[in-house]
Amino acid sequence: MEDILIKEINEQPEIIQNIIDLELKNIISTAKALSGKFKYILIAARGSSDNAARYAQYILGTFNHYQIALATPSVFTIYEEPPDLSESLVIGISQSGQSPDIVSVLKSAKQQNRPTLCITNDPDSPLANTSDHIIPLHAGKEKAVAATKTYTSSLTALAMLSVGFKPDQGRQKSIQALPGFLNDSLPVFSRTAENAARYRYMEHCVVIGRGYNYCTAFEIALKVKELTRVVAVPYSSADFAHGPIATVQTGFPIFVIAPTGLMYDHIEQFAKKLLGIGAEIISISDNKNMHSISKISFPVQSEIPEWLSPIICVIPGQLFARKLAHEKGLDIDNPEGLSKVTETY
View 1 (cartoon, rainbow, N blue to C red):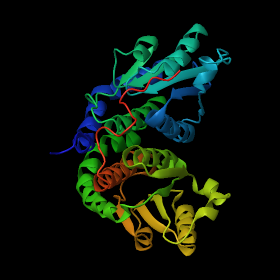
View 2: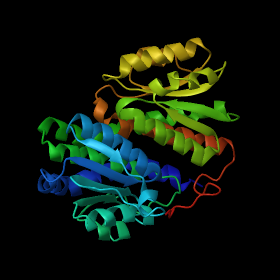
View 3: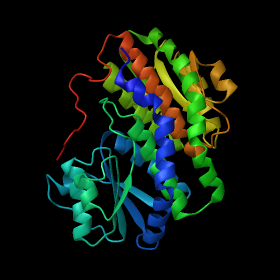
View 4: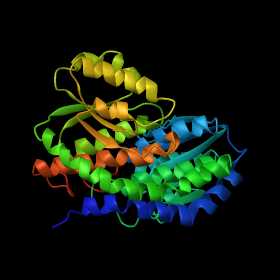
């Protein structure tokens, strides 16, 4: 019997098409209404949504020149000492829209007369009911505990928001091409993921990403942890070089996310350094040089621009984690100790 998770992974091209078709005009209109009303953005999120917020730091920083801060929700809830949110736009990202601590950040913003926006898969949730503006994900009910389609649709929403704040027909067309790229990539990624059986007895690994794909490193590490019980630790290549690189021994598995872009040359050189000290590279890249030094390499289409690559590059991690969980005999749809909706305070 096919697991629910693989069905939801394979739904992603359709889900991305849905949010583009149903929300692009709304997002552009929302961005226009918000423009000029804030100087920086504060984002409240947890789990996979927090990784989407990391994507926002790069895409809204590079293209829109906004400073993006990640909220510390316990300051609003446990300590009950919310900061001054003057000049901010406050965004909540949550697939369920249920977590009280995320809602509390937006409630505080409204009390301080700041504009609020949420990205959620439930437009009737407490988070949505608190927000001035809502971007629904239109992902359908996500039944598997591990988030997949709500994560990539959240990234797509943020990419569209970036275009809304700074209209650009070329970038808009690139977003509209995403479903086609996803459709073409999924069969290739699925075949490559079968090689994850090699790591059946893996107990730890590292995931390296930088720039736009810093978020991808965190999200792939989260999927591996959730589904396989492997201790997977995300790093930027810069941070890993500052000490943790000392943990690398012969055969140490390291995921390297390296699509073509301004960050590529740095990542390739770092991967070669890792290879030289014994690491075993699992790469996600469109570059033949990266493929040649990898034990397993997920081939990415070179036409995908770097700023949209996190929406594609995370899928190999989803598929790898699923395959490895299957090899370990674990419950893919209901990992032990986890629940679909997590409420934190």
